[in-house]
Each structure stands twice: as structure tokens, then as C-alpha cells.
Length: 100
Image (cartoon, helix red, strand yellow):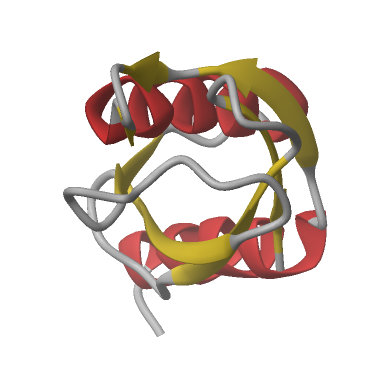
């Protein structure tokens, strides 16, 4: 196995095992600003794990307390994609998230 392949595998394992989470405020009118959510989640992943990741969330998520949705987090440079579960904490666009 090449060194590059080992490094990518280590990043994928770090992402998969990290079980990181955080909170953010990401509202725009009646829908969540998922672009901001992606940025905040990626920033949180890097701060907590040291792994830079690209995060992709669905568009047009209506704000509704208690609703959940999922985003995908992929390590920069490739690797295994992780699932981010996002929970809406209130009707004002505040969210919490957890990477598994």
C-alpha cells in the first residue's frame, strides 16, 4: 500500500471515528442557509479533528424545530464520506450537528 493511500485511509478513519458535533445559527427567512451550515460544519470538523472536509447539505430546508436532515462530509483529497446529522434546535435557524 502506498504512503498516499495510507494517509487517505487515516483521514477516512479519523473522520469516521471522530463523532464530532457542534452548534450554529444558520437562518434566512423561512429556510435554513445551508451554505452557511456547510461552512460552519466543515469549520467545526477541522477544529475538532484537524481534518479539512467538504460538506454538502440539501438545499431549501424549511425551518422547523426538531426536524433533522443529513449532510455528507468528505475529506479534502478524497476518502470515505461521513454522514452528518443536523437537528434544528428551534424555529430561528439554530442547529446542532453530529458527524458519525
